[in-house]
Image (cartoon, rainbow over all chains, first blue to last red; front, side, top):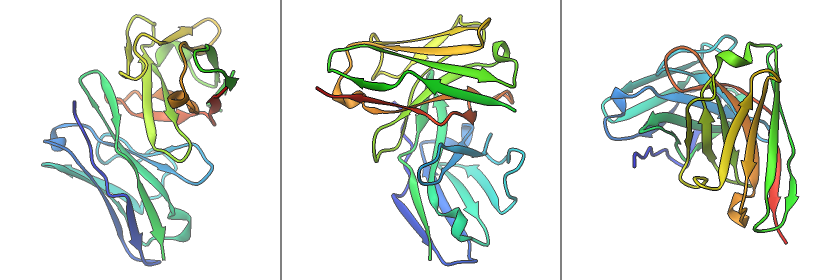
Length: 106
Length: 120
């Protein structure tokens, strides 16, 4: 079955750029979705179809997808960006989440 | 506004059954596929399954095949998850989610979740 891999944690200095990766075999040929989950809250869709932001999501969040790696980029990181981030794909009639990456803003 | 609200969670004994409900409002429920996603305490997101907009297609994660059944009532704008033969590994917050419409399986609306605890 298809697997996607995320780093357990990423740290970024306040105001700098954070990059969270999501690896999978030929993931560039799939649509990748990204969710943000702040502590105690439900997940929130922040990117759909590789690089599209839903209405209301800050333009500091962007994403790319190519080859075997999808990347979520958060620029000018703020304290409010601290959260768990999950990538997600659809494969063989199964919706698959990455294990999640905890983002810490230092 | 667009809203989905889960209910029906609680404590159930191992081997027992439970039915979760999800009431929706603010959108044309019958036009959307719907999913259930769960999250064990301290764990990541795990997909449970989906039902298509008209209920004709259903897909399940291996963890729930044969035990979980997803259904919907488009007249009541409601989604359901019937769970049987529950084990401790099914303990989780269960989220009702809406699938987006722009040609991919993404989840653009989430409820606050309903906690299911399987314990004797």
